[in-house]
Each structure stands twice: as structure tokens, then as C-alpha cells.
Image: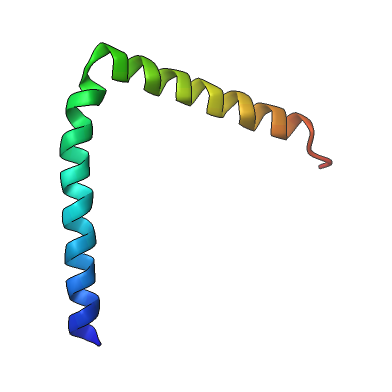
Length: 56
């Protein structure tokens, strides 16, 4: 069971590292940076709207 768990953790982290390596190129571009900024702004707007509508 420990071996299976360790193997899965290694596999998951390898896939995560490979995905991050590919995403780095896109995020370093102007298009990727603008997309991240828009997604971050939308997230803050959503949190603000949820906070304004909360009962507490």
C-alpha cells in the first residue's frame, strides 16, 4: 500500500511539473499575462459580490 501511494505521488507530481513547464511559456507571454490579470480581477469581483450579499 505504501509503494502504491508513493508511486502515485511521484506520478502526480511529475505530471504537475510537466504541466507547469508548459504553462510557464504561455503565462510569460503578453496574452497569458492579460488572461491571468482578468481572471484575478474577476475573482476579486466575485468575492466582493459574495461578501456584499452575505448575511453576517
